[in-house]
Length: 165
Length: 205
Image (cartoon, rainbow over all chains, first blue to last red; front, side):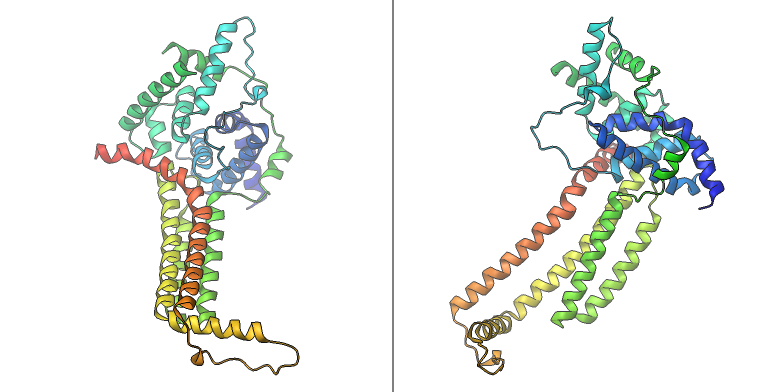
């Protein structure tokens, strides 16, 4: 690939780093895996960059590649079943000192999110990012109506998990 | 759902917790090699294809069939691998990966089946071969001239058949265990995700 393309890629990529960090945060539970996934997503974005024709927004395309990498292309050995999920508290630092209740509730919610399936995590993340259902459907390869149905199901599932944590 | 609104607020707040990579660091990152699962799958598949073809060549039983199989599957694998890009939607990408897996597994199963059929057809001959080889290896000493025993003169008893049969079963079980370790675990979650995404779609149709 040409240097010009490299420059263009970095130019597009740089302001969108936070989005990738967020995806890494939701799919990994420690700093090392976070960094590995970040790097793999960056490589996949770079490899797919020549195919980006500008038909969708760069961030939508980036979302698709990043989520595909997290839920299909990049797999770390799973933790043994029954082993409790140990969260890296540093990566989930919540700066709500004055709202202890909120902080506690948020921690429970993040813990519940970690227990969701890969696809459910993707859906919740897109909900948190306020992505329209049409775009969610495009990213995942399902219809808009189906995205809506799935989202409701995931929200209910998350709610059930939060109440049991 | 109030809790989700609270989560959304926290999720979207400006945070300094994430490292901001510089242009040089990004540049360095894209020069790294990918550890993508598809790539690993392709490498495992290719190693397997080469090993089976080598086995076919060494045993001299099915060289032509194996060669035709080898080239047909190589073409299929390269075609599917090139078709795959991370820019596809998730369901299309997962489908492509599962197709790649199906192709590699089909090849492995056909190869395994050929090996089993070969072992059954030539069971008596192979037992005699092993007995002759065992006899040569066991009785050899530096003072004795190196003359190989003719497997045709060996007369295996039921015990020999039994031991050889058990050894074969162990080898086949080991092969199965290797498949399970290499493909099984990697693709279990992927298949689950694909089903999760596609099930509703099928219902909608």
